[in-house]
Length: 377
Image 1 (spheres, one colour):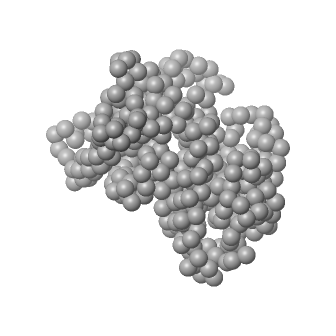
Image 2 (cartoon, one colour):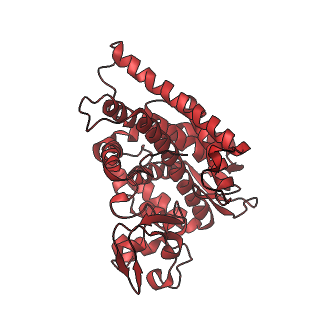
Image 3 (cartoon, one colour):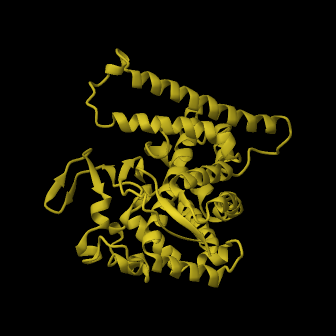
């Protein structure tokens, strides 16, 4: 589905792509994305005016928001232009989820293609064609003198590497396509689900919603979020961390043993694959206390290290080590901005229509959405 992109590749290729992603989604580059994140959130909140006093399904709202943000910040486009890519990727995700646990004979698809195999190939071709068209537009702008270079966003960095004269730094067209797919999907899905779960928890725990709103009003007032104000939102950060603890993007992560290692009483041979159970780690009473299953952002009041008793591997919503998610800071930054702007304008409670049914499809998402009742302050 994602080809050999950042999430699935390894070795020197992974190192090369990781450097590009680190540059595109952290530090000064991340700060420069703030304006686009605010503009996208303002557009969403403008439409919310029609839902005051009524029920609104926020999972779909955040799907639009996060799609718009990743399109603007990473690819210099907008949701309208990227909509076809998102639609095709969504259909691909649904196919992958439907076939994940099906037993397949290795290599059988080379001889016999099921209806889903054929559909997946068509979707892949469609995704590739749309991305190629988007990339060609930017190349033409440089060729025609409309732009001096390919740009400093993720798309521009990829194109610069694709046209690199130094072969050791150059990436292939397949690399280009795979990285675009990975960033489009991961950049949208992770923040979408995070914001949805935050809204669910704050609509239930309205005391924490009020604490967060008070903090936002103290440090931002009615102003749009800026770097200084965002850095002071301690309660908002605590809420986001607690949400990620209870509803991490993925319930587990797979790893390969590169050399034989002793893990407690167990010896893991080289090339053994194993899964780290994120959900169990995040809800272990020995680490988090007897209230491990409860929503209690206060546990993060003195930082992650204190909350985990200085055990960094106990809180891994975005992974750990050198393969920690390259977009984790991007997701947290976007979530803080969106949540702060929502709290400036609206209060919300859980709708009776809400049905709690978390399901793992790429990330842990609410199967039936998250319905809340929206009210003006």
